[in-house]
Image (cartoon, rainbow, N blue to C red; front, side, top):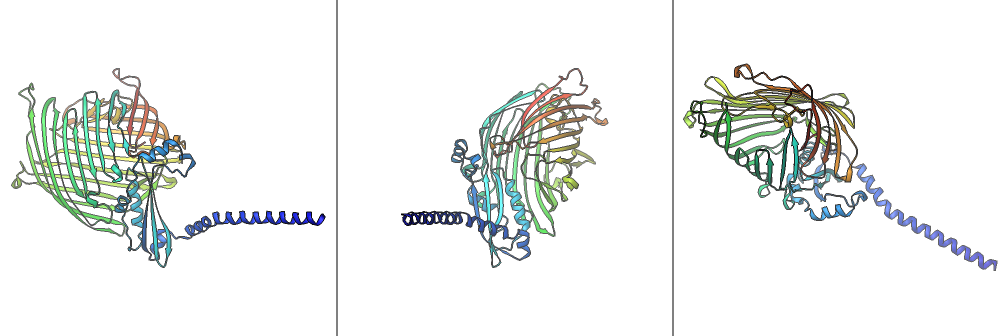
Length: 553
């Protein structure tokens, strides 16, 4: 009996050990491939190391993914599954055509980094990762993983800025059927009336780098049509550009207290050449022809003694030079919350000079010019300073006309990943005798504590100080939340030559909430601000409530 009991015990023991061995084997089969894969991924060199080794690109795999990751329990619910089902994913060929690297080419870490930067700039992509997945015998296979954004916007909205209410509705799709084509119709109800807008854009026309865009605006005081077909410098190493564009404008304009019907017809054709990216710098040279015709008609009921702006035609051959230093920095929690942001810290500038010759049909000889300069600096503790200046105008009859000069500086000084000080300074000066070129302050144009366009002139200064806060709250995995306090001070006035009034310096303080719609393609930031003017005149309310959509903090 004892022998039988012992035999049964040995059988049970062997069975248990067999079960344990089976469980260990199954666990090994489940875990070992992941361990091996992790070791392989960890062992893969970086793109910089691959470039140094002289690696050549082999297969390029495109993995275009849905809006929500259903493998993540936090995103696997009925609402997100419905969103994925309704959304049409970006077609892999659309992503492939946007790449700056190709199979058979030597690895270039710069091109891969620029590709990722460019892809992240496409509104219909939420996330982008480019990584090597295998490396053998000098050949590296690369995977491009993208995750889509929600790209359909019903256009419903309401905003309040500077005491003015605005509502809108329409339909906007920026990734039609996954092709990257954008189309929009929108109707906006403003205090002055109703405005309609229609836009269409295809950045990969016929599967190429050619961009086709069309825009129609039916505004309260203007009607605008514009169309452009352009093959741009699509990367720092692009070698050529060419394009044509045209526009018409029918506008009611007020100049010196008189009302005019202004019509403008404009067209341009151009081409350009570059050696590409050489030693971290890109130099571009372009030439073309601009045509602009302006006509003015005094509306009925105006005083006969008012000076009428002169009709004018300009036919201007032009040349353009552009230089860009390839120096970008990737960061986050600057103008957005928990999203990658890129700042150009290198030097960048362009200058365009044209001459309107009477022999080509211009009303009078005139020089046209436009120039800009950009530079950024990074300091210790991730502080960034970005400065920009620009000037544009017309020089004719020995004097500057229609001139606009602008400069702005932005300084970001983070105290931590969740807190940052921001300083912004903008200075503008306009010199234009005939067009409505007023520079304004108030409401949506700065000085949040004052009504919209409370001050105006041909000179303007605005200083903005903010303490920004970036939370890690991620409600519904749809929104990022931020907020802060701010102080604005500025002034808009007329220079001595105009003989107009002397507007005083104005200031306002306030606080606000920022709600970032991160899964939407439209980069929407819902802003809710409460602002209080400091020592305001009697005609200014003691506070302003602003609620509107923006694209930055």
